Amino acid sequence: MTSEEELNTVRAAASGDKSAFERIVREHQKNVYNLALKLTGSEQDALDASQDAFLKAYQNLRSFRGESRLSVWLYRLTYNASMDIIKKSRRGRLVSLSAEEDGAELDMPDDAPTPDEQAERRERLEAVRAAVLELDEDKRRIILMREYRDMSYSDIAAALKLEEGTVKSRLARARAALAEILKNCGTFSLDTQSNRQSTKNKGGAAE
Image 1 (tube, rainbow, N blue to C red):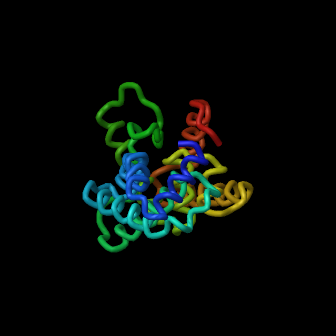
Image 2: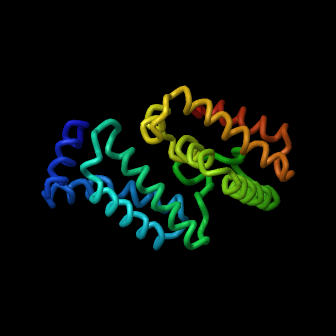
């Protein structure tokens, strides 16, 4: 749907048109569920978070003004619903950091890893996962949006109601905080982190 079509559909749904809201759900339910699954690490929690997000969307349709894409608005609701579930259950993992998922390359490329290298990779992934969990809410949120959901600066700015310049500066601080946690845990040396970042940049990752 175009932005105008989205806004018209939301207005119709807010006026009581059930078919319009069903169209919104059909259009976005897959992405909403996939995001919730990445955040919670649990299929059941992802289903619960998706339902909560769409319920919250239905209850607040009149507040949507089309200032951002509907998908961004739903993303924010899904993120909040997922975080609420994580806080309540204290189980599952915040986000999958596997290199196979959505191209989220968080370890060094290796065409044929040995068993020792595979074990080291798993240790690094666990260290990164733990480090992400240690970040405060604001830093964790912006890292998730940019690094693991590959959202553009403009979409992040719209979702968080910030200027793009503020998004970039906050992201830089979040990355620095994550790097500091990893350095302090001793899993990554500064040289290793630098080499991994250089490898990621050469692979075309957007900064």
